[in-house]
Image 1: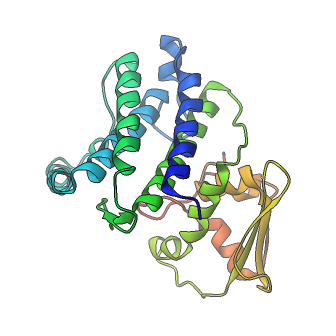
Image 2 (image 1 turned 90 degrees about the vertical axis):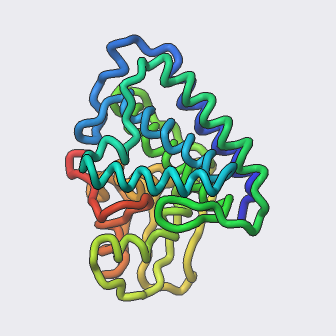
Length: 261
């Protein structure tokens, strides 16, 4: 398992790659719609900015984060608007970009000070510093993919995809619960071809249920950025096939990828 320091390095690289794409955008590019229904480029960055900031708060001041979480839940119930939870902002894109720069750096600074065995409070359950940072990598990559799709920019595969595949694999139990489906429990072997040609492996070697494919396509399926039928990822066995159709690496209610993606 990577250390928190190594994860923070990879998170910084993922953020830097996205920032280099956004820094020179024209005004009209910020309002281009992404494949996520109802979201444009600015919405996607606003979402990342909001949760990088709240993750920094959770790591640096757990008590204040718990107050924030209670207030958020109360406001959400009172107004019943998803924009609160999604972290949307009406800030000018340049102001938002600067704010995200501060927020993402604040998170790195805060999480590196968390004791290795401590748990950081989060919206559903507390997480380790490593798990929370892995989740931030997954979120940055997934929403960065939306932004790249909107702008017609390529999503270049990197070794950081291992974190996205890892969290997606570990989210299997949550995925079935979120979709209100009983998990048969059969072991699944996940074999992912990394950008450098080596195989990343999860699960027992002798498992009859298997999923295999390129890293970028597996990551897109786990984050619901591509429907599995539009990829070359292969599933063997009924449990693996069922999981591939509902795979979900992120928290929230059970959703599935659009066939249009």
